[in-house]
Image (cartoon, rainbow, N blue to C red; front, side, top):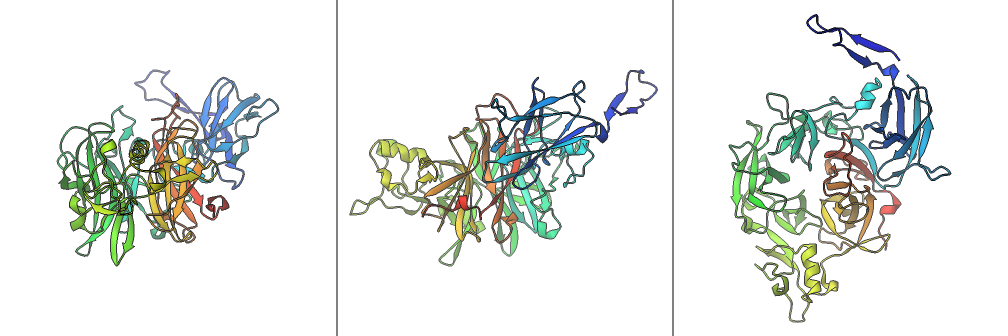
Length: 510
């Protein structure tokens, strides 16, 4: 094995030198999708003595384990939503003989309907490709903005660029990172940016040390607790584009200190508080808003979980007034969920009446189930109930996005759901003729075994071939999952998938 000897300054001892392997010293293993031939990220290769390697975003592993080079080595092969063939004893793996400069290509079968493409955030996105001397497609393949982990992405087009934000952000220098929102921009593919098939060149807003800086500085929203943004949207106000988002200053996952709207200040390159909402106001901007044209008016439909049941006129005046928001609900106008005492609106014939009502929140899935349990409403009176097209069992959405799709000529939803192989690690697809439905069938498109993949979002600005091919990302993390191990480099980061809407498996039953 050849090495480069890096000589040290005279003040250092003779033992202070580093051995750096050259690309030719590594054995290159690439795992590819047998259907497309593309490298598959996030494939675990594990030796019999539990040395774990995980393929990078090009599907590569750079192997150079001392003592095992030149020997026969067995690698088990495992990946979420993919499957390697079994041998006669039921083991899924392969025996290789790693040699310096050698290579091997392994083909793996994709079970997921969607195709895993690459990791967008964190360190070492193309680590093994770089070690092997290969040219990654992105400008910063090893470390960008000193970010090692990021939660929950939101993105929109603002002033002819892509504008990204994330939640809590980890760094390499200390266990505590940025808890006041991270941000970045990127070029649109039509304006010099990468094809989303290849990746995204993110340009982070950074501090003087190069780390992803807070996008909501303390001077804008002061007080304890991390700050999260949602509902990121670009609107026109007096002919100019404005970038708006909902902010929440959090006490914990379920408790909020403060909520309102922020607006982006282009000169300061930061968000500032626009308006503070009363925490008792039940309706507000959230999730990944969708633009809907109705009766000559443009609305924003929004909510944390699709299908969206909150709307507001798409202008700054209405966005800033909680009283202007409407909920699609069967509660009496101005009503609230009150367990057995909940008051529902019914007509003279006893039929449940759904409609857009001011100051009236939509019922959550859990609340609906409680009302059915207590006999306040019937299961047949639910606004919607999605069923798994394979098992016919109910699917309860949990975080996601809803968009119009020109190829399908339907509204489509990409969302997570509880249950399955992991707590919130399954990603689903559903479609409907209108934003309000009928939403009937759901198809699982991505699975993660005992691992979370939450808050998936479909980036419609990346749609290709008239909307036939769509791209979505989500947060891959052991949080909320049954996993006892964190996947090195990948954990708590964003992963991009592609879905071909021409896939016959996505056609709902008649």
